[in-house]
Image (cartoon, rainbow, N blue to C red; front, side, top):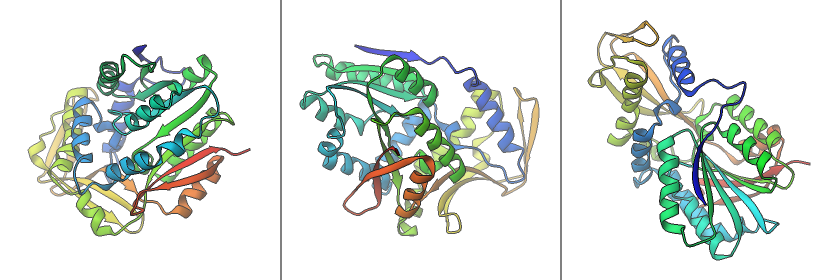
Length: 329
């Protein structure tokens, strides 16, 4: 079975369109303009980011591939029953998870894979490609388009099996500490005592490596795509030629921060919001932040969120860690 479903938002949820508009207005109204990076991720943005992950200087993706390849047996041993749910939050194209899926199929595990993502294009393409590759196997795939927690709650209510939840990549690194803690507490309250979470963290490393990873033509294209999205979604008149991108490491926050610089005095009108937003020459608008963690910070974050750490899985250079967590008793 290979299918794709669009999730029905929970009663407390607002539509993705309204979330987008609210985030844009809030971010552009700040004295120091700042927009969240999730706004960049439509189908086209996901394609650009996929290309970024294939760059030699972008270390998280290569490191995580290495971890999953080298530790797939250990990850599989987390499963205690005959059947389980493999749930991926922010699945994208599922390229790293395919390694684990192949291994689980070869070991004759019975499981249902649920990729969850806000990008309909990413989910649809992933399900179609898996169907083409695995149609002769016993793999079951249900792609869910929408909010992570709407997806998790729907899966858990309909299928009370053991869950192995994957939260790979650097999504959590892109959240500030309070947001990350709140997200993880919510996740902890959603999962059961037999469930496991495999979560990725980009570790602190030489700042020169960080600089090279976040300053290249593709990263600039990715950040400028945010302006395309606002133009398309909200009827804005951003001119990408009036902005340039620069990434920098902030030692005070231990985050790589990416900015778009306005190269001139300009006013942008957003039709859907009926608002004008003014930019001075060389005024910045922050578009990304990616925090880098120490192991001590990861352990504190797990404890504060109600999890206990079972094990850390590292790449050979210890640039990245996939940490195995479960709900603390």
